[in-house]
Length: 514
Image (cartoon, rainbow, N blue to C red):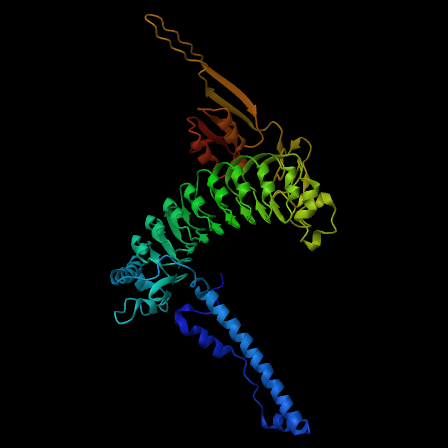
């Protein structure tokens, strides 16, 4: 996204004004410089003509090249480079034209248009001016194709009537103060290719109707307050190239339908509360280059199918509840140059073949030994780094745990006493309940309560433990340090009817909301 070359508020003549203002001009000559130039000038007329022709020729080339650059910048800034594709909407009836104008008026009113930035609300609602001339509105043949209102001071909700912009291809509403849900009607914009709604305060769930947008190439919804799960219908957008959903409040599981997005290059889901296992189908995303699913509540193993991500460059998996070991097959990924796995519950070691590969673009690390390079991915078992669980500079080495303490996982940020965290997991187990009614014969077998004491090294382990063992009642006591945001929500998702308490620094017990 390059939108800073020109200000769209100056409308379509910006390309011409931009070129005229920035076209290289011949240098101004003073009388002294002209005299000095004449004294040093060629003596023959042919040499003078040749010199002048060469200068004019160079200026012409410079003018042509800069004009091409300026227009290319203008096109990229205004979206014109995408306005020559095949669209399903190629003309509007008189009624549809009126609905298009009414939709823009509705957007103005529902987003407190009178308080938009002054230069962004210019000409809006003027009855004498066609809506295609309003600031931020770009039309082709009278059809609104681009609506550019990024950081324009919008505050309010996106009206359902946005769907009456039948031919809209690009919607820029990022960096405002928009609230409320994304309307379901947005799924009616069949020509929509780029949706920029990031950095607002949008809430509610992502509408499943978004899967109807088969022309969609890029979605930016990060830094909002969206809740609920990611709709599986996203997998129907076969042309999707970029998906940013990070820094929201999304829950639920990763849809296996992601595996249908064969053109997706960037998948950003960081900083949510997404739970469950990573679906194997993500390994089908052959074009994927950036996978960022860190800072969630994901459990289970890193799928072996990740080895099929032949174009992957960045893989951020840190700060989840992932278990098992780092797959050896990741060493076959040819372009991988960024891998974060710290803050999980991974055992084993980082494959040595992976260490040099991931850090190959870091000039400062090329001369380091393999062990140190591996530390930049994650600190080994029984070592720690207090900030990130990995070495990230020469002054942040992985330190060994002191006597009597352990760090059982790769990428630990601290060590702990081997027996300091004992969890009492209680469960009412119905071993058998068989009732056979045949005349007067009734057979019932009921066995009662069982209790198990388990030593776990991190509180997050209880989430997967309870899930695997089908616990319906869970009583947990642990140190404050071992709780993370989202752990309580994960416990709630298990349907736990037990309790969760935290032991404070003075040994007192405090009940925690689950």
